[in-house]
Image (tube, rainbow, N blue to C red; front, side):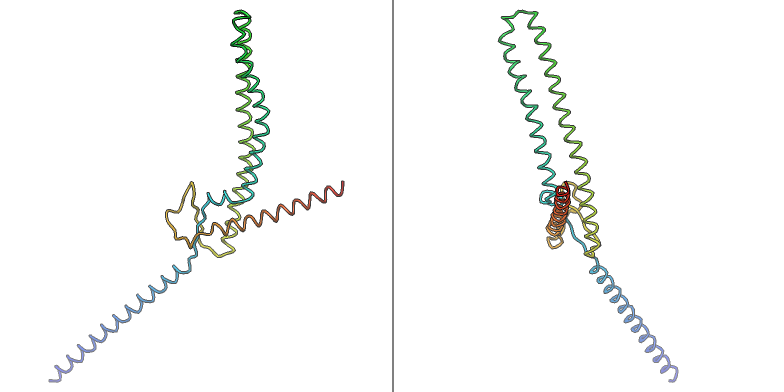
Length: 208
């Protein structure tokens, strides 16, 4: 009889131990899940539409306008030369028969040489503008990257992704889009730096 009671007690203790272990295991898993959730919540992420950024960033627009004006100004001079060449080429066709074969060969060689020179001038102008604008644009992009890096640190972001032509984000909720914030901050910085440069220039003029 005693042995039966003892066995029952042992079973009860064993079952209670199993239940206790199960409760502890569940508690641990709940804590682990909560910790994981907390860690996920701690990650602060955002993305920037880089195409939109470069369209709306004032310095980038100023740079584009600057080289567009240079292209038009230098292009006008070249265009005048091209128009003169076209007129001379048209006159050559009408005058060739009247002036004879020798004149036509000599004049034709001159026109060919001018056409080549104009082609070289066009290429040289395009390369000059591309190189000079490329250097400034590279500098601008480097400045934007540095600004975003500093902005991310200041605002406590863990990740800031970029979308656009070279997209690195395939999907993100709109609430993570900080493009407008960055554009506003960059434009404010550029505006203040432009004012500082104007003051320096004014002081230089006053000294003169």
